[in-house]
Structure formats: structure tokens, C-alpha cells
Image 1 (cartoon, rainbow, N blue to C red):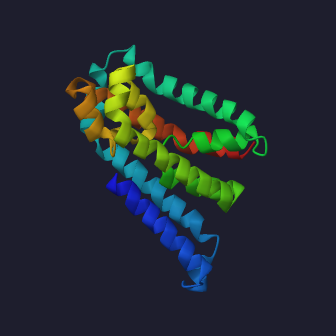
Image 2 (tube, rainbow, N blue to C red; image 1 turned 90 degrees about the vertical axis):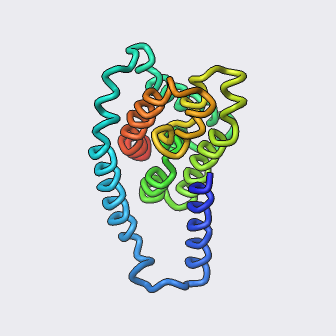
Image 3 (cartoon, helix red, strand yellow; image 1 turned 180 degrees about the vertical axis):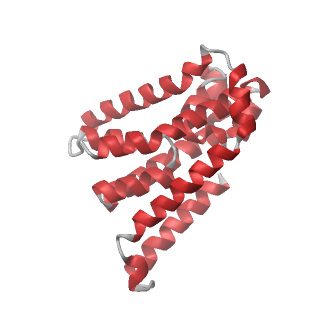
Length: 200
């Protein structure tokens, strides 16, 4: 949760710097977000590639449980489709793009801002932070009401890093490998799904 609060603090600081013109013109250039995005994608690749122990441990995963990331993706996109009924001013592709962040706020919000503008990018940032914070705070209740797989599914892309400790504590050590695998797979789909829905 501390990580989410830090991200929100930086976001608010960025808004204030933009409002009061506190940054040099070179840093306010819209093209800079492209280079930030490239750097972010590079470091995501480095983190995935360097985690060889997690990649090896995936071999011991129950094949049926390996479908959980797919169910998370399908369930999230189905929920986002229903959201368009409540938000008629937003297109289906907007809602699907926001939902396709799966909790990965730093990456998805940059993509969406670049493709659809700052307003939807801010919505994506807040929606994905809320998803992570809800997992961090609600994991015990999720396990009690819906079973040990529920906080993993709700956590989305965050289950291999920020929400892994709370999932381990609430669901049990038996679900650590599944949680890492789930986060890895969902994380991998974020740039492809977000850009796909943004380009519709």
C-alpha cells in the first residue's frame, strides 16, 4: 500500500507542477512520455528476464490453476463491458482499455494518456491504484467469502510483486507460485491489450 501512496503522491506533484509551470519546457514536451514508456518497457523486460527461479517453478503448477490468469482477464473485460451501460458517455473501447491495465497503473496510464488523452489516462491510473489497494485491504475478506483464489484474481498484474505478501499471508504458502505465475501472465498482456483497445 505504501507503494501506491507514493505513486499517487508523485501524480499529484506532477499535476501541481503542470498547473503552476514549475518545470522547464523541455520536460513538459509531450514527446517525453514516449521515451519514459520505452524505458519502462525495458525495465519490465529486465525484471521478467532476471527472475529465472520463478520461470522454473511454473513447471510444477497444476494445469487447471494455470487457467486463472485467463479467467481474470475475461472477467475483468466482461465487467468493463457492463460498465459502459453505466457510463454512456464513454465508449466500449475506452472502458476496455482502462480495465486492461489490470492494476498495472504505471504502464497502462502512460499508454492510455498517449493514445486517448490525459483525462482517460488519469481515470486509468486511479482505477488501477484502487484495484491494488482493494486487494491489499480486502484480501482477508475475499479469502473468507470467495476462497483463496479470489485475492489473486482481484490483484491482477500486481500479484507477483506488491500484493504477493498479503496474498501469501491470507491464502497460504501453497498459492505463492500460482500468484507469481498469475501476475507474470497478466502483466505480460497489459501493453498488448491496452494498445489494442486504444487503437479501436
